[in-house]
Image (cartoon, rainbow over all chains, first blue to last red; front, side):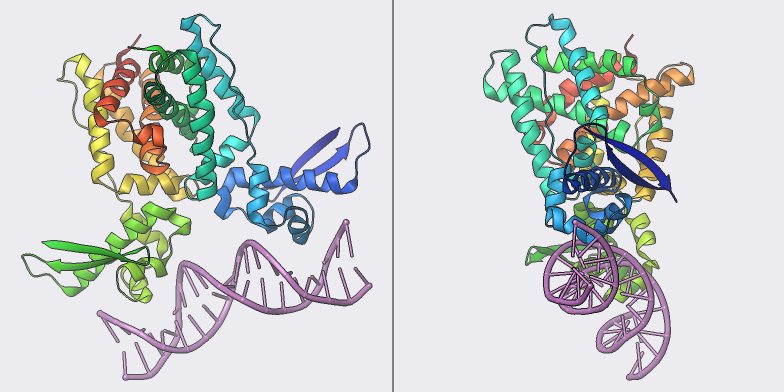
Length: 205
Length: 205
DNA sequence: GTCTATAATTCGATAGAC
DNA sequence: GTCTATCGAATTATAGAC
């Protein structure tokens, strides 16, 4: 098991990684450290403005090591942005609870895994990231919506589209742009009000 | 009055500008052409990935002319991203129509003025653009919400926050990321369903 | 495994001729 | 007003010594 100590000098984060249990090859530890630093830099600056050198500095390692382990910047990004929405099966819930439960799940995933912020901040200018987001929401979300009710695919696609505008809007304002009126909303307020909207989009009409 | 002819060679747009009426100084025409090209490049690529050289090429002009007219890249961006939401006074409308009317106004503004897409695509990685968006939504939107009903400011701020997540989410998915399920929604569908949500956020409880 | 040196680009910005 | 030439900085990526 690996553990991290993180500290920052001159407004720049650094990571020290150490083992807590099973021994692991040094190369794996190094790779984990690079990946952790990469996630942070891509998350903060987006694909284009994150640099191999900056990532290497945060991981306390030589920049050439990053290339050695990940080949190039694209592959490093792909590794750092690996993500799964892990949408739960909501079909058993009472209808009134589906929306709030889904919003809570989204908030949790967004806060526990940097990958979505990475993808969102990069997708706006980086084609690979945009394609990943399109794929995630085209497959996982539409499938979940279609499963919820037995409707023809075009209608499920409309519901999924409306749902995505609201959920990505929350993520953009709260976790990427950090707009004060949205950051100041509590989790409970978001779950209640946005949950009601999601319910309308998924089950309304 | 100025008019534009636009064509593209090698997947890159170019602009020819000519007068239709009143004569104008050549320097003004040049400046207009640069600004038009700049809006397009910032809108497509964001601040960091748009280049002075690319903008100059689109405007059929020497790159040094851009610097001459606008000083530096920051000032050129500020000129290209100049924007006003022009929120209408909705307090006279029947309550049921406020949400749909507001959504329609947002869609119109977004489609007739590139500046909002410019700001949104740049705000994610460029601090100046993020600050502009924060300012626009902190002032114009919150003021409109507060005017709609006579409520204490913290409550108006919550309503404005929820509203912004939905409206920026629509803009992000439809005009920036161009997610298929959202692009495929018709204007009428957006006005109807998102309008209902907006009504809930602005007037609910 | 690690690091120095450097190649090859690209960009914003400036100096200065005409 | 216009353009050539160029500076200085930053980046990804590679070659090769130890």
